[in-house]
Image (cartoon, rainbow, N blue to C red; front, side, top):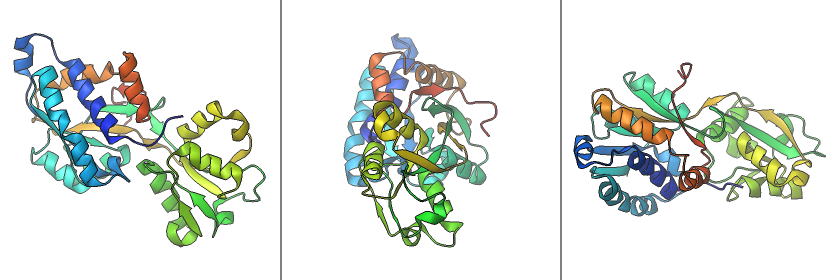
Length: 283
């Protein structure tokens, strides 16, 4: 069962993709432009910034020693800050959660998606789960109940449950009696099964993994509401900052990130199964 987001692993995957895409010869290495990568602070949710910065520091030297490409991975701040820094060429690449990229394009329509990061499927969904014997049949029935929201949950989970509460005239902190934050989806669903909380808000793929790993426990659960579809996470660039050749090299490397055992392990740790080309209907 995969756990919460690891910033160290996320950084390793992105750099690993770049490493895999680099030509072996010295001449090819010289053609690659320096790359500065920023990622949205929401990807480090529930992790202190000081710790994130310490984790990220070694990756610049790792990238250069393996590829000959000067580079740096940096916290890019919130959506607004990362968008502006891409536009100002302070970053050549940015990593957004999919829905954040939609917000970013409202402020900067020039931004383009390079690749998407998928977890089996090209779309994300969240759901609210209760025990099968619960009397709750809708979100309304969970008012003033205890609910679990796992740490490091992706943005679509937060947006989904916040919207559910706002539609009922309250924010989540007031709609529910108490919100607990277990260390992962499995623990959150275990808490529902044991009756420690009355519901959990989880990613739908996390629920599928739970069904595979704990089918008996899964049979004691029931879904009361499923979100609309959300777009996958996305690697973004501002046109003109990197050459077409460099962008193509990066795309090729990312597309092959899941072809090795190490790559698959790293991807699984951040709940991704691979990078894919941007679908024609992504926008």
